Image (cartoon, rainbow, N blue to C red; front, top):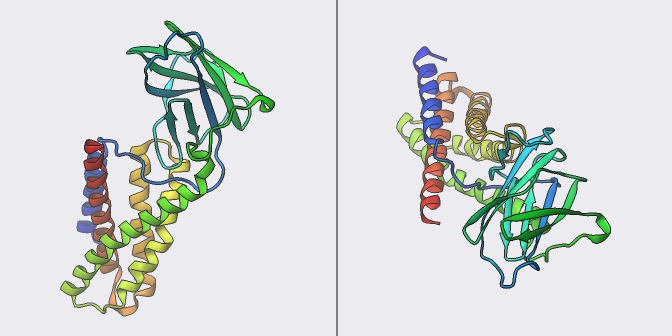
Amino acid sequence: MPWKNVRLAFFTLLVLTLLLTTPPPAASADIGPKPTMAFSWDLSAWESAPIIGQVNLYTCGDDSSCSEPVLIEEMAAQRMTCDEDGCFAMLYSSGGYWQLEVEVDGEILRSEPFEKIGYDSDYRVIFHPGQMEIVYLPPPDVIGFESERSFGANALAVTLMSLGLALAATLAVELIIAAVFIKRKSLPWRLLVLTLLGNIITVPIVWLFVPVFFADILIAFAVQFMTAFLLESMLYRILGGKSLAWRGSFQLGLWTNLGSELIGLGILVLLSQIV
């Protein structure tokens, strides 16, 4: 790969990292079961039901004192959904100590550290004026969420829908960019088939598996981009025949993935400002 293209690739990665400093909302979910937590609200200590606002979940690892809690961020399958009865969290990690933070009538309450017991853990959150108590519910006493309110109950359907939308959006962008590239370089149109094939291979990998191994959203997006770029460039070179040398393969892989990444991030950031 010529030095000029190497510098361009590194510059592209730098631009992506800077853009990612505005965290976008999660756009996909993971296939397969994940550890879960279900929290049901107990407001019996209140004469009139308080207003429940923002809810945050923190992980503390093996630190039972939770001296350095880390906020759980939404990414792929890892997310928390709440309604008037409680919250349901799907996670990438199981076990360890956790803290729950809830805004109640404008006051921020944070629980004492509690241990996650079991793969799927259920808790009752008892609210008192000025404090809250987390009570673990063993399996026989599990309080479940109705399927229409539970994110976990429809995890596979959400996963397949998210994956389908991610693939459709990526193809819509990359096929257009590839068509422009092919037209300008006077290349055979059959290369569009490789763009289609490349995305069918790479989209499931970068959306479903990369977030599992990289919890930091900035690192995950950078790895997603580089993985798709390298795999699709290799595919162009191997199956492109004499139409594309390594230089052309890297250029096509770079511009298609750069375009889909930037446009996708722009849409997500715009939606985050609207929603």
